[in-house]
Image (tube, rainbow, N blue to C red):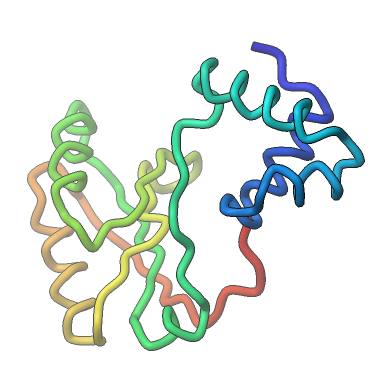
Length: 144
């Protein structure tokens, strides 16, 4: 499916606030409500929009320890490592990346430093993980 510029604008607004009413979105895009609803329905049917989620306020998130954890995986162990990491609830997002690392936990979230230490140890103990490197998130400047 080809994503148009209008679709991109609609998706951007939905990323900002997926609970915004069709009327609110229509006003911001200078389109009719029917057109906006039609585009949303089309994007959902095509699988472009796979669902809606909650974004927690930065003030609440800052009470937790968040980190990006870079992971080097041993050859031929990628699928097993991904499966194992998928089962760790503190791992919110996992991405394959280029460069010196193979995977990046885009966000690992725990209650305190001790729990982050345990999380990185748990990730490092996964069969197939060669090494990890972590960067603690201090703040989020913006998110889309």
